Length: 177
Picture 1 (cartoon, rainbow, N blue to C red):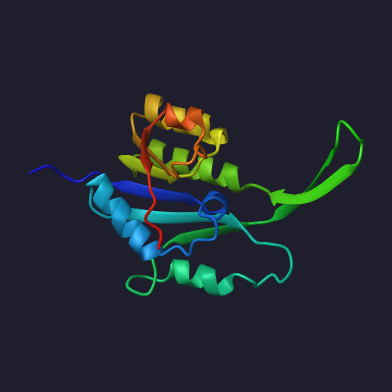
Picture 2: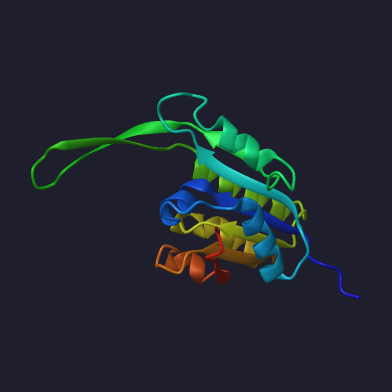
């Protein structure tokens, strides 16, 4: 009898929210579907990384508590919430400045967790629900140097960078409701 691989799930919350295009996501069903698709039993850990939007510091507490709740009431994620930082760019044509808020530290947190679990041998398989090519080096090291099975999960709409697609098995997942 073959032993199921130890699987870790990491979700980039900003990617998921941006590309789900307002679709309400059933995270319990998402986790169950991914476990079936990966044919490897349950995830030993599930992580959700995001940043808190401007405004009330407690605006998403209910959502984060749902993510942390164990089944059947929730998907049982460990949630990491980071701050936002100001960013400004000037338009090269008109020189007007545009100011906006971006995540600070989320990608580093995801890459660090991915590498930590790869190097300490906690995971045989890492499922990364993200599309950002910034994860390329961390995924490459986990796959090529530490020999982990990497599965990139994303939307089939061009939102998963080619860099990520080239480094792992790609599973385009559309079961969110």
